[in-house]
Image 1 (cartoon, helix red, strand yellow):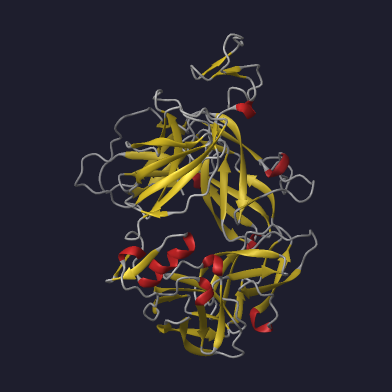
Image 2: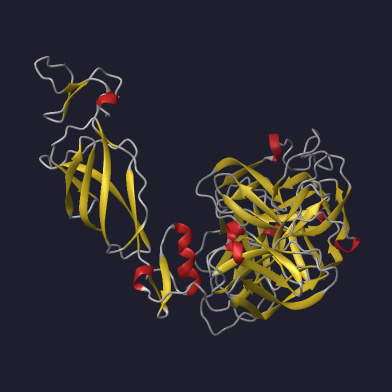
Length: 548
C-alpha cells in the first residue's frame, strides 16, 4: 500500500511482491491503485487469559483465495491460516502467553512463501493477553479488572481466570485503610485527601468516603482500583478531629487508625514587612497551622504568588515577587489554602513596597589578579537588601556583605590574566538596574577616584592588573637583627597602578605583625616593637595586600 500511496508513479507486482517504477503490460498481477491492494481488515478482539487456546477469524479485502498465509503474533510460533471463503481466513490453536499483567500482541498475516512479506494492515489488529496472577494483590483489585475486559475472579486467596474458580463469588472483604495524607485541612474544606489501603473497592462508583459525617467527594480520575483513592473534603463548619471512613457497596466499611483534623489556621506576624519594588525579599510569616491541607499559597493582592521556600506549622518563608507597578506601595499578603480565595482577616497582613536601592559609587575599580581585594559599594536603600552577590563577567561570582544602609563590601574573585571586564550586582537575587538615568558613579568631591560612568543595565567596569611587587631597599635575602631590639623595615613598592591604601597592605615577620608607620608612592616603613622569638634563627618576611 505504501508503494502505491507514494508521490511517485509506482506499480505493485503481486507475484514478486515488489514495487516497480514501470508497468509490465504482459503481467495481469500489476496494481496501480492503493485501494486495490490486498489487506487485512480491522477487527475487534476481546482480551483473553494467558495460556488459553483461541481461534481467530479474519476478514480480508482484495485477497487472492488460495494464497498460503500464516498468522504471525511476533513470537517464534506461527499458525497456518485456512481459507473459509474468498474473503475470510481462520487461524486455529493459537496460544499466547505473558508473564506480565497485560501484553498486547500485534496480529499480522505473513505470506508463507516469503519470510519477510506481509499483507497490508491499514489499521493494525491487536490482541490483548492478560495474566490474572500478576498485579492483583487482593480481592477488589482482582475483580476490578473486569472494567478492562479481564475476566478474573478471586478464589483460594489468589486471582485466577474465572473459569478456574468454582464456585465463585464477587463479594470481597471489608476495606482496610493503611494510610491517609495529609492529616489535616482547613474547616472550609477543599483538601485533597489520599487514602491508601486494601480492598478499597473494585471501581470508583461503589465507594463512599466521609470524615466525621462530612462527605469527602471521591475523584474518579485519581482512583486506583482497591489500593488508593483521592477525595476532596467538604466544609466542617468548625474545628474537629475524626477518622476517615471508606464504605464499599456490598463489602462493608473500613475506618482509619489515623485521625484527620479540621483546623483554623492563623497568621500572627510578618517579618520584614517592607522590601524593594524589584522583589526578591525573603519574608517570614509566623502563625498557627500554616501547613494544613494539601495546597498552601501565599498571595500578593490575590494576583501574584510569594514563592514558598520553607514551610512548617508555625512559619512560612517565601520570596516576594516584583511589584506590578512602579508606584505600588502597600499590598495585602495573604495565606490561601486549597485555592480558596482569602477572606479571613486571620490570614492577612500588609506588606509595603519601597523604592529600590541605588548604587552611586564603587571603589576601587581595579583588582589584582589573585583576587580578594575589597570592593566598596556606596549607595542608598541597602537596609532593604538581605543578600548580595557580585558577578565579574568572565571571571567569577563572590558573595558580598551589607555593612550599613549605605555601604556594601565585596571581594574580587581571582582572574587568570590582566584585562578590563564588567561587573554587576544581584540584590536579593535580582539583577540591579539603574532606576534613573543619572550617572551611577560620581565622587563626593572633585578629584575623588571612582568609576565616573555606568554602563547600560547596571553594569560597571573593572580592571584586572598584575599583583603588586614588594622588596627591601637592597633586595637582600636576609636581614640581620639583634634579638631584643626594635625592628624597622623599609619596603619598596614595584610599579603598579592599583593605588593601594595603607590599610590594604600587610607585613608579617614570621607570625608577628609589622605595623606600617610611614607610607608614600614608592615605599613604606613598618616597625615591630615586641620581642621577636630567639628560638628560630630565621623568620620569613611576608608582604602583600590585605585579603579580607
